[in-house]
Amino acid sequence: MMRFILPLVLFLILAVFLFKGLGRDTREVPSPLIGKAAPVFSLPTLNEPAKQFSPKEMLGRVWLLNVWASWCEACKDEHPVLMQFSSEKVLPIVGVDYKDKREDGIDTLKKAGDPYDQVISDADGKVGFDYGVYGVPETYVIDKTGIIRFKQIGPVTPENLRDKLMPLIAELQAK
Amino acid sequence: MRYFLIGLFCLLPSLSFAAVAKDIADDPVLEARMIHLAEKVRCLVCQSEPVSTSHSEWSQDVRNIMREKMKEGATDQQILDMLVARFGKSVLYDPPVDNETAPLWGAPFVMLFFGGALLIYQLKKRRGKVVDATLTAQDEQRAADLLNEPSSKDHQA
Image (cartoon, rainbow over all chains, first blue to last red; front, side, top):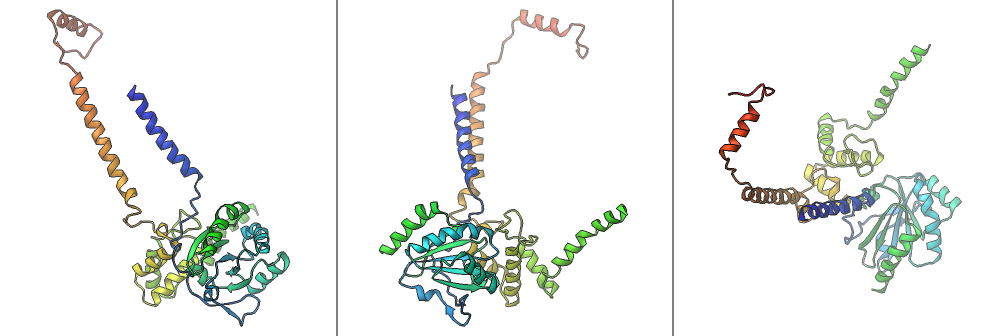
């Protein structure tokens, strides 16, 4: 009896591992930045190049940093979700227009609507690099002390907003 | 005309090379060092290609940053550490042995150990089962008869 059960058990264990592997998105690399201080920078805002934005301004508040671009197709899917979320006024959303032409960024927000409290322009992508961005859109939840608590690679969907982001934001805001 | 067109299309790849050529440092020594280092780094956008050969924009950025850092005098290790700090250990093709990756590195040896133990166990069990057969004179005669049958050509008397 044992000689049949043992291979079957081994096969099932292997099958479970392989099946789990099938469902995993290999592009989702766990970010080493989680739990670390959000990299410091100072960048011009998109609409007024003379005005600078720095994450220091956001200390004391839980906020979202959303990296997007006018050339990014997935950002177009994400955009209505952000518009809806922004209208709920849960927390400030700062947009980073990543490796984009200023005019294109402004144009996109004019046409599709602007969900952001502030938009900054990271034209050469240096800040994006410091934040470990490799596939836009990417979204970071940053807590009151300026520590990155969560990173979403790829578009924010209503589902992961409800299941992941909202509970985390509520928890961080209560602190 | 058709052959002319085919010839023309064959020349197309050379155009793509012309476009890539811009993405190179002026200093060939630095470029060689950069490419050598970039071979160890995974392109996170394309997953199965090193940054050294990838055409993705992200890889181009990484190569540019590597060149910049090298010009500033950073060592190869400093550059790799910088990438790991931002993108995680999976950017390295050769992940370091540490607490997190230890199971991965150790698994083959654990499997070898259990496989070996199983093999030894099975062999020992079998040794107990196999009994040396003692043949009676009758059995021997029967065996000899079978072996001597004309059809078995390779038999030696």
